[in-house]
Image (cartoon, one colour):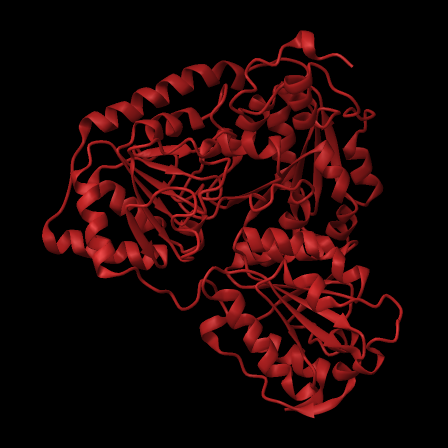
Length: 566
């Protein structure tokens, strides 16, 4: 095909099935070549949000998300979103308009060494130095983004190169249009060793990380659990590896969900008792592994991950398995079938059932509370009751993550809850929810955010309204930076500048051309959620919650009212 460099870039993107580009219409020659009957352009209010929208789109579709920016500060605005994609293993391709090659080292307006600036936050940075390279550069970007541990790639598009005419091939290698691509399997020896340890264990535990969901290994996780009668705990990004109603589901691990009222009490107890832990698709981060106090010394560890750098990073590993979770578990299941390996453990099932009952008895009174201001547990229970198999819950970081991961039931295996666990940065959920809904309009998308986090991003409500994105936003409005306030109270005995003015974010929503309402009575939550889910376009429910309520974080159980002074 003969065309400008920008048109060659776009045609290669189109051949890869790119149906949406999030950004601000730079690289300009690319945007002016877009076939808008095939690819939707979503103009954002901040390039950071473009990268996050592309992230949400990728998770909802299984395809790399594409974002774009201008040079200089436009490019650096992408960094927060690209960093989250990098840490959470999500393929995002960022198209960055670079200065013309003829302007290098001349102090051009907003000049920046984009390759150096973006290298730390991506798998690689590719610069197109000649228009003839356009097709090859985009194919390379997709190949790198979707293989190994998926992640973001930046493509630099110099303005004069994008304007130049050239001839290049714009076909797509279909192996790299979805992720994960090029699945690899763990060695036969490691599979045999893993089977031996699991079958002989007295108190084994399966730990399903985010890699299980990325790999679409839900069926394999369930079949292994049932074959060997082993409970399944998950990391936060692994929520959805198994449905909560399954008798072997132990819920989310870690310090963020293991405190008072937290479902994580179940899995943390099982983890502390385990003699063998099979970790699948997890980077073994601080929060989910309780500041690395679990597994306890003496627990045998099997670790399966696509990235060999992660295996043995934090724990002594008895069996190292490098490979894709889904296909490696298929091999493990086949080995068990060939060798007649199985295991039953009625005592273990009884243990899970008792732990579930204990948590339920603690949680239900507060989940049914009619207190005013509203208890967040009541709000989460009402959301959970109306979530179904078509729902995608998108949470922000901080308290919202802990509450949602613990208190919303996963109704079926699969991608059900998205959250920014790569970095834990607030101000993520709204743009991610917009990107996810645009990527998969069939999903019922519910965005959960605190008022602190919402302050970072509510400008994108106008974007949601402009493109008629049907997303329900629930603001947990406690008028404060909850985690920071309570952490300061715990650490220092008091807190300083954490409180906000009383803002009704449903009024903000209406000013930005959305619909919404404020809820102050727990008995009105159910009807408000039903209205929000049935109203076309973006809808914001501002719910006034108790500012003294903490997420189920271990160690936050004893923050006393007498300490809540300012």
